Length: 545
Image (cartoon, rainbow, N blue to C red; front, top):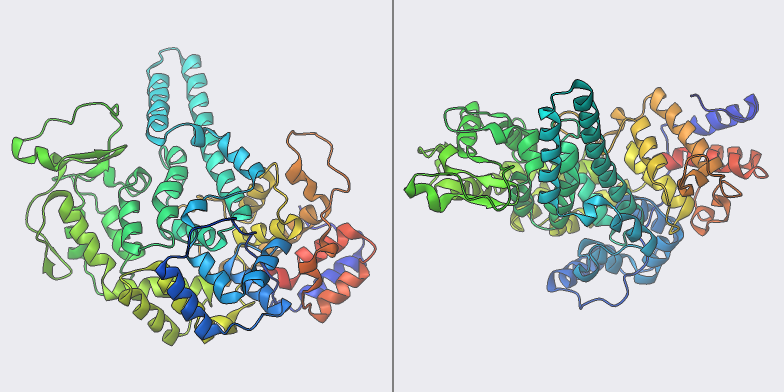
């Protein structure tokens, strides 16, 4: 549905505002309030804060600078997040974001936590839930009556859809309201890097735990731990077919993407022979859907000590190719699952991996074509810190190129939708994330929905088409005029009045430095709050972070 403006003159005003759509300008985004009493900062936290203070200085930021930093580090500015940055100062605030307080790792407002706590994915342990869903699927398949089978299979699909939607809603609530905004940003970044797709097999049942237990705990930790957690999760093993990879029946899918997309990168010097050897290393790494208390499968006596099951993850040495292997020009010396870990160590610590990860981080945080010198410095810090993600980000955030880029990075759909809701409603917890999830899907960036393992693109060219901008204008109109849909808990329930957010009254918005075209468009709507909101939310400033 095209953007509907009250009259052609107002449409002209909006299009004139966007004519600066080299899309100049920037808005602002912010973290949330403090987390109350917290343990003393760790030595790593203290070192980071000292390095940040030395590089960035300790002078207070003006409002425009606070907005630029908030827009880049968080999911979107809000009055509370701006106040937190102003209270702590930039170095201390960045250090707090880089090293989240583990006591309050999942801290959320009570209203958001209550929504998450009521979800099935919160009430049931992951492995038993997946096994129950698998039993439901098998029972449906076994039914002889065609109508009963269709009904049972429909119920199974609905159950999968429910747990998927819960995972998506949980992600949205955390991104909107967590005080650890950088952690939420990096969780999304790594989910996209280690991408899996909801449409394959039973991934809808797996993806929420993949994010929660494999990605999030390591999103600011060490890359090697993150890589290993991804490899051991059934979501990745199912998505890239390693559950089917066994000695004598080699499947190279995961081995290829592990090198090309997760570690070394294309053109880094590895060969097809390396892919084949890594696929042999990964044989036996798979999934077990047998009951959790089932005895191990029968093994040759000399292999029994190598068998491992942890939840749904299984290493079965009977399926593992135990022959000698060479990876990246050097022999592997371990056997069984220890051989897998040896291979991951080699990949995670390869210079090509440092360069590949550094480039992806600088694309995400700085520019679509990042300066090679910056990539080299970030890669050096990644290698020197043994893949410490937070320490690598310190090197990135203290770079002059990072500060110079603030306000220039084009928002992908997820960033645009999140930033709009945070700006519109701040700390007020939405009761219904479904419209927000729908807006992301309409813009082409469904959570966990990218089909191929390369993840969603991070550059402007993928998201700045005329069709995309028309969709954004429509979403801006909905949020700006009837954002109250986010607080409606039942279809058909009357919207609260007024149904639009009080954007013009926001202290953050009042501090924006607007382009002349944006200011002119807003001036035309100064007595029409819904139109004013729509113009602001579809402005060039809102498109960048």
